[in-house]
Length: 380
Image (cartoon, rainbow, N blue to C red; front, side, top):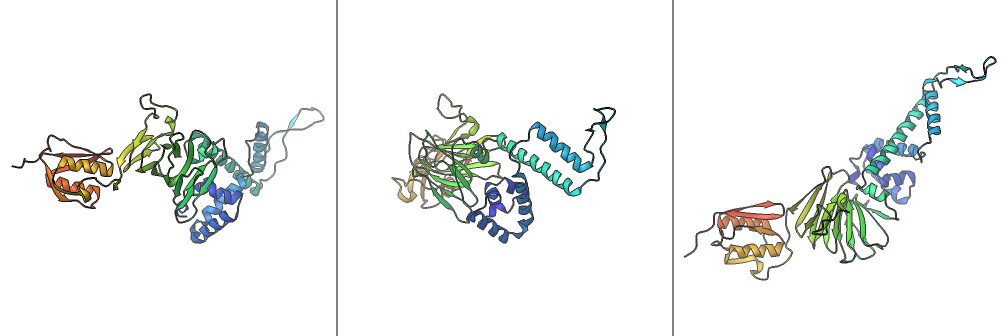
């Protein structure tokens, strides 16, 4: 519900769930929007304006023909100025003589109605053009689908779990929505997301799972990951928990790289990595998540307790346990050993302790951890 608190009149008019309430109300939509109005009375004016506009525009279903357009303009001119223009009337001396009609005073109610009609038509076709020009958006993709889609919207304040027919699931956050086919019959399992969802995908190498979200495509075979693509945001975030995913702009969908077979500009993400997609520039970048989680307990050095252990072995243990890449100069740090109980400390805290011990520093570049230091004096 909080997702609607900052909506403008245009935002409400473009919202599928709001339009459903105005144009084809049912118990679900009526209950939600009546509750929203009761909880947010300050939005009354904006909602009433959007509702009135939609009701007026709903009567305009198709673009008027050229002849209809001329008649509409003539009617508007007639109502706004009282001067419908020259009329051709029969005359005793000249059958084709043009005469001026009688001037009438304008009807201000009709004027307002005509202006509202023009604004409504303009807004309606502007919206349709806007969606057509942005095929990568949720609304554009759903509107352009040639097959029937099921849409689920989380209008509750709690996360909502949706299960697809082949066993995969998505947990939708409040205000989010997803569209998909009842059965994934093609070569791909395609899903369209608006908002935030956490996916757990059933493994099927023969039929990749594709999530389309605000210009970005996430392609997986079987894994778990989170996609955040808020309608008003100018970026998309994908965070991988398990497995591997490929992310790429939707514009690259049909442009595969011969050497990799992946779409041009695709990034491969592994656990504890995330990608950011700037929808304005189509720029795609990769980083580590802010708090990498443990994905595998170490076979040796249980509980991350090290006793006079070469730092190279320590770094290798961390790489395996957290699925990260640690870059360092092995020759410079070959004499550095670590004795420390790192236990259940978060990854970056572990690195702080290690670097303080061996007099080194680390930075995160792209999705790699780069450690630099002057080295250690060899022990005698």
